[in-house]
Length: 491
Image (cartoon, rainbow, N blue to C red; front, side, top):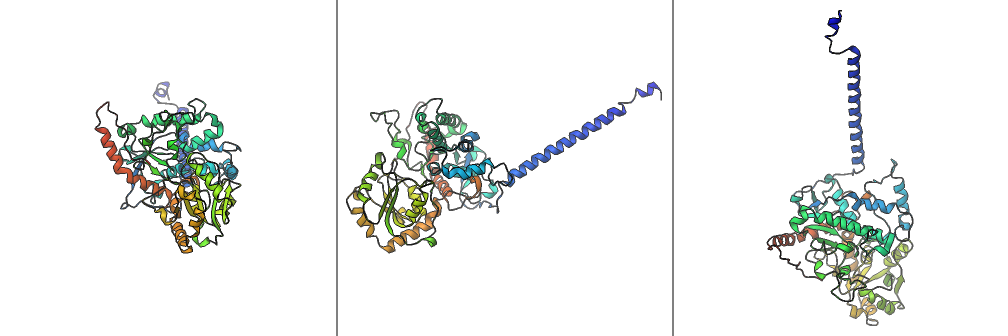
């Protein structure tokens, strides 16, 4: 073959071989990349698999919920931060030791925990406020397993009835109180809770969804009275999920008059727009079939000294502490006192529920789960799911003035017949599930019980929709420059 003919070849044989080898390497790389991606997706999916899919029922009513886009650092990332702490008087409760151990080995194939969705603390100081965790867990559950939920998650904000803000405001506050309590009320850079609150408010109030509705269709979970402490006024138009209204009326300790800028105005909370939700109970559920003889008439365990409306507690304590068949114990159902609380509530006919720093507490829901008839001494209490639940079917309500009369309360409770007590207890057993948040799945991600607390919360928000829509329409017709205050009947 002449040199002239050689020049006509498009490439040499070594060049062809090199091109072919590069093509093979590229193909194999793409194959392995695809395989690894699929495998990771399958592993992630398998960690969230459940026994039975629960398809939605198109014939039942539901509320359409859009999940606001917030960084993970404002919700599950706060749990990562919590679990990174070692033992501490507030943040490192002994109740969390086992969970800390499990999380430290969560990378192993045998672990049932998903690091993406850490568990909520068992620390009773924090667990009692965990509604924020369970509500978000419902929305984060894959749609094919959400058939029990009254909430339908939508991914277009224009289709939504409400916008849920996934900020663990209570956990954020508790972290700050545990790390540097002295900075909690100060708007300084060292107050991480304040910084988080500000970032959340800036992000949410800067969104088109907030501007369109004035925030009236947004939902915040504020179960701790100190949650969102610095920005309650800014989010006041929204639907607030609170355990009661007690923390909203507090005057700053330095305030000398009612005109202080530190005072939370009554018009920022209302039964018209907001929803009262249960505390998370701390004691295990006692089923009616497990109920035994109750030898004590009345039981109370808690702090004797409280502030504001809780001053009634100290007076009641002095009246009752030496009465026969009545147990008054100082303490809290933490790791050391929990067993005493279980025994005390399960062996007593009635459980005293006086106001504390706020009108209610998790003690009420511990009593219900223990089938101990609540005796509610709190003139300004608001209760979850009223309209769905009639508390007089299983609770005794006593005015503060009557309760503080010597011998009055003991005589009143003694005169309640055994038949009436049994009726109270049967009614309580029927209603126990609606005060339970736990879905029974690791990380709170999984099908929720249809008759549980989360669904009842969604149903109460659903009842607010006509008023929310009316408020948005009224807001639109305001002339520019006119400020119309939020009008509501406040309790």
